[in-house]
Length: 114
Length: 111
Image 1 (cartoon, each protein chain N blue to C red):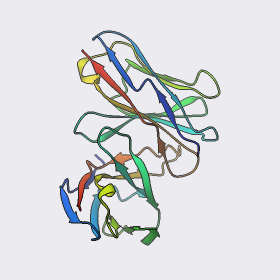
Image 2: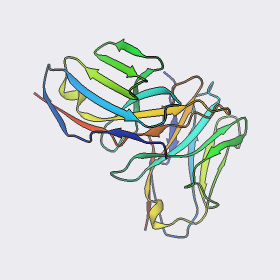
Image 3: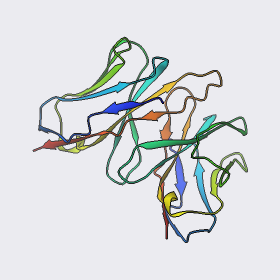
C-alpha cells in the first residue's frame, strides 16, 4: 500500500516567521511531488510541484525533495495570516499508462498568528 | 486564467437515488480525474480518464460508479444508487503536463 505521511499539526507560527511542513512517502518509484493548499470547505489549490532532488523556490515558497530519504518539505517564508490553511502533500508514480494518479497525505494544519 | 468548473456545488439526495456530478475541465487538458474527500479524511483517487476511456480506477470505483465524456467539454461522474457512505466532497481535476488542477468540488450529501 503506497502511503504519504504528514504531521497533522496544528503547526502554529507567528506572522513573519518561517513555516516548515514535512512529508514522507513510501513508494520509491514516486517521481512527481506536489504541495496543495486547502482552505476549509474548499478544493486543493496547487502551490508547488517538484520533480528532482534539491530545492525549488517560487516567491515565498520553497519545496525541497530528497528521494533517497523519501522526504519532501515545504518552507513558507514571511508567513501571513492568509497562509493559515491545511497543506496537502501529494505524490504520483509515472506508470506505463501515464495515469499519474495522486496519492495524498492527510495534510498539516497551519495557523499563522498576527 | 482557465479553470476547472463543477456543478452543482451542493447536491442533497436520498439513499438509493442516482446522481450525476458534472465537470468542465480546462480546455486544452487531456487527462481527467475524479477524487473524493470524506470530511476529515484524505483525498482519495477514484478514477482517471484519457482518450475517451478509463485509464485507472480505484477499488472504491465499483459498479455503482461510471464516468463519461459526452461531448468535447463535459466530464461526468454518475453514482447509480447512492449510499450514506458516499457523502463526501467530490473533486474533478485535469492536467495537460505534470500538474493537476482542481475544480471547486461538489458536496454530496446522502440522507
